[in-house]
Image (tube, one colour):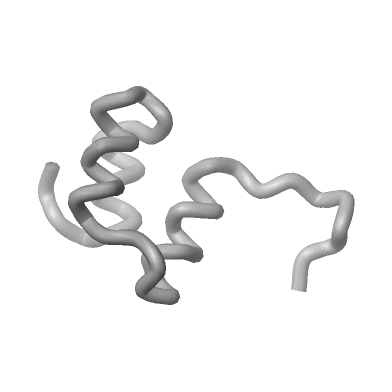
Length: 50
């Protein structure tokens, strides 16, 4: 478990949501287009090419 004062990065948060099935691949692509995560982050999170 995380400590309450520890801050998660966007990549960590989205990766956790992906593994729990709480975010779609399409939504991750939107985050890449908006510059919130990189293409490399996208590929690492969902294991597919952008």
